[in-house]
Image: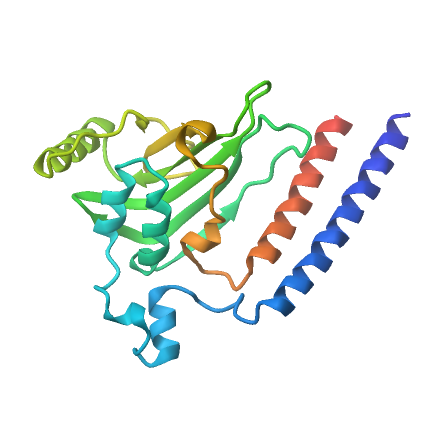
Length: 237
């Protein structure tokens, strides 16, 4: 019986993979610009600096941190506009159990070198979502990994907020201990979608410039395969 269930799962995952692949081919055909760099820098380079975006100020990590500290969906739009300030980075989509909605769907970004912004040294970014059992909406988290001790980072953030007459949002958190494989102290926001007006997180490849040449479709397909393998391994053992 166990073998039959595993075979059925393999077939189901295989058919889903084929469907995703065909969908990606169709989308790539419809959108001829899906593989182009849509950051401000990429747009200006292709347009010869005549596109409307080119008249705006240069990309700024400070603007991103200012928007981030508000813990609002506006942060993602600012990050998209200013993403070239972080350069190309390593982007990883971590596999998860396809049958477990409570396991976080996590994306991890690691910068080539620290990015200085508002007295903070940013070394990476992490975002995740999960669907707790019985919950009416997703739990969504996003934030940066920063070099420094949590208390020093907290003081720097508070000083910056005071100088601008603002207070840190209650949804903002500083986590002093992070996975050893991810450098830096994590600072981030955590909200429930229904209380924040957010139904989902943007794809991480829309937010940062990846070092790889993979597209959202290719990265999503690789994630699906890795997650299917993880799911089957858990069922087997």
